[in-house]
Length: 79
Image (cartoon, rainbow, N blue to C red; front, top):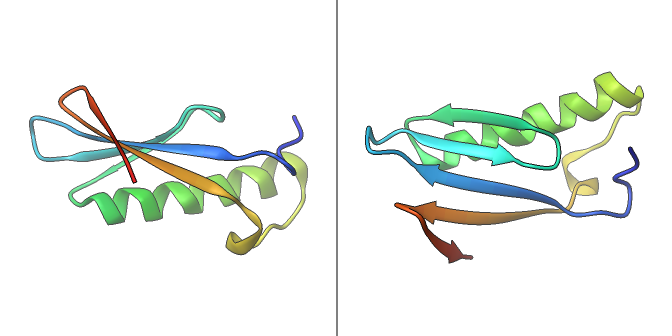
C-alpha cells in the first residue's frame, strides 16, 4: 500500500490503569507506555520501522505526516 501522499492517524487512549496506548489504525500498530509522550514516540518509531521493513524504503520522521487524536474515557479530544 502506498502511503507516500497520505496522512496516518495516531490515536491515544488513556486506560483506567493510567497506561497510555497509542494506535495507528491504518497500519494496525499500537504501543503502550506510562506517559502519552512515550507511547506516541514509541509508535512513531514503529511506524518508521514498518515502512523500512515492508517497503525497503528508508523514511525520515520529517517525511511522515501524522495527525494525533486523543481519547479519554470515550471522548475525542482533537489537538
